[in-house]
Length: 450
Ligand SMILES: Nc1ncnc2c1ncn2[C@@H]1O[C@H](COP(=O)(O)OP(=O)(O)OP(=O)(O)O)[C@@H](O)[C@H]1O
Ligand SMILES: [Mg+2]
Image 1 (cartoon, rainbow, N blue to C red):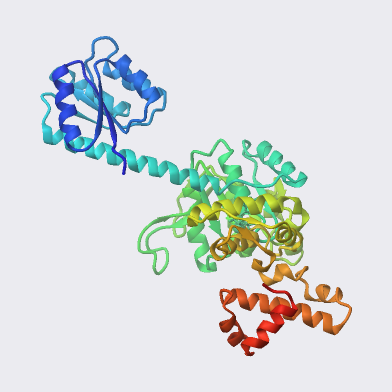
Image 2: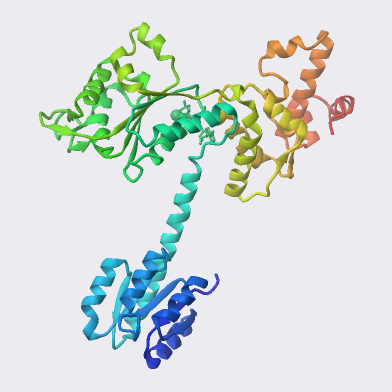
């Protein structure tokens, strides 16, 4: 690890040199300044992990310097150095955002502990920031096809309003990504985004999950619990797979939407909430309404702003960008060297029907990043479904003129797959296929498999 850098700012030469001495003995890199002005100039250019800042300084004092650092979002932990007369200021400095203060005359031990704690705090904050950035990067909506561009435009318009959003689309098309984007681009982005997967919660529990319950409301309710509606107060509630709610629960949700208040299970007290509801479904709600599975009045309540997620096969031009994006993401995650599909492999990726949409594409690229050690991805690396040309076996068979050519095509693919499963080890592949090694070699030669 490289040495951590500390800046000491004090007008007393004695304090500067003694702090520099003890901190350097501990293995830190230390610079010193005698004025706030000099320190601020240095901080704007250099990389420091911690500042020790005297409160009383000749021209600009430590408090003003601290305010400037906060305004400039320098994000470095600061320990104030306080004399007897400046203790009150030290307390105020902490309210402003300083990490801690030490008192003159400086105690060696206390100062060192304060320095170690502040540095650890800074490291944690930096890690947090990096994690948050990674999480947010997972909510970006890739795609510049006309439909996706239009969708992004609509999100931009709808997000800052409080309008309820209903997102339709097949599995894996990005409904949740859109729901989160609407939240982060809304005026509620600082408050919570609370997700409820209506399909994943057993019917008996869903009301308690949504509205909370009081202690003793039912067997097992051993304490009060707040529900998702309340947790999302001021923020956004995402009702995923909304069509999987029972009709009875739908009636209760409808009432909350109408009245903006509800009662916890087992309670008579009304709780008021202000949350924006976003719902998503992969079902055709009109069909569900006709079949009596979904309340039409709830449908109208939820469906103020509809978004339709296009299936991936209807925007194939986005596939290359998605592939590049996911490969980069997984290579970074797994610490692998970056790779690229060959033109032929990319053609297959684009031509495939992707019944599982972006989620399926993401899974395939993850697998390729893990399994392919070379820096190019070839057609033979792709899952069988993609290399068959179409994923509909019957359609694929239609391309063959005779039984012999269909059998050969299948046989070749099958051998390629088995070889891959066995890490290109011919002996093991032959065993897996139940044929002689020499037989496999002849087949490989006949089908020009390398
Ligand atoms: N346009 C996109 N750009 C980048 N990543 C995407 C995009 N669309 C989907 N993803 C990713 O694909 C995966 C599936 O997306 P998401 O969970 O939003 O789909 P969904 O429509 O909610 O699916 P389901 O109906 O199965 O719940 C997620 O990992 C998501 O990050
Ligand atoms: Mg989803």
